Length: 325
Image (cartoon, rainbow, N blue to C red):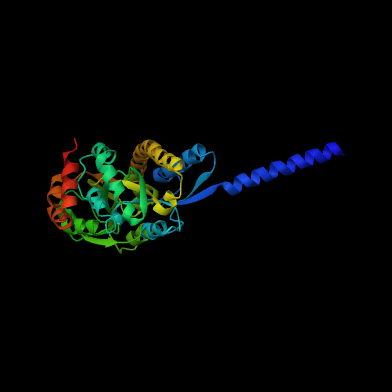
């Protein structure tokens, strides 16, 4: 009987210790508009695994994919206000809040993905990260989102002339609206989740995005003509609410920053594989991929730069980006 009592006591003690550990864990919410398995979603999941491991389970990250917490514009406000702690989002919707994000969103500012990596992994990337703090955010990492190109249901686009009169969904960003206008087309900003039905019903003719998004959102089913104009190579940004970050100890802050940095390599690896897989998939499904004369698109962008790059800080930033070899 005494032996049984000892065992029961030990079991209760173990249960109380387990409960205490569970209560001590802080679970951070993170949002992503893309579906489960998408490279950005998996990048944030990997960040969460590293944080959990390196804090001995004191912190965990729960990723809400597929726009479960809302579209990007909504979740940006949620993370700024502290409703959620983390968010993976395109940089373009930040253009009105963090002016430095205008530069990476400019059409043809990056010559290639390799050029973008060199810029965002260096001092220029650090400068852009620092600019998020006055907006109540800490930029932890920049993720790959490939090159964005136009696709539509009407016809192949081989030159700027083919863009005339077409209606395209764009990110909710003035730069993207002006870029489409400069090409003679009409821009319609709308949430990502509404694009498929808008193309299908003829509200718009098409949209612009990368191969993985064109695939996973099934836009290739309703817009078969994909034009590799590659107008932007816009990185994604992974941000944290600054108040939540400031509550961390200096040691945990260092863990979070290193985990984010380590997640970038993982995300880029997943991105490259997904891009190749998605391109093969949409081609097999009948998507017609053409490569237009890019120089005509590049030449049409002068008014966009003239309108959006008037601030001396941004002018210098553009020069610095273009100088990176």
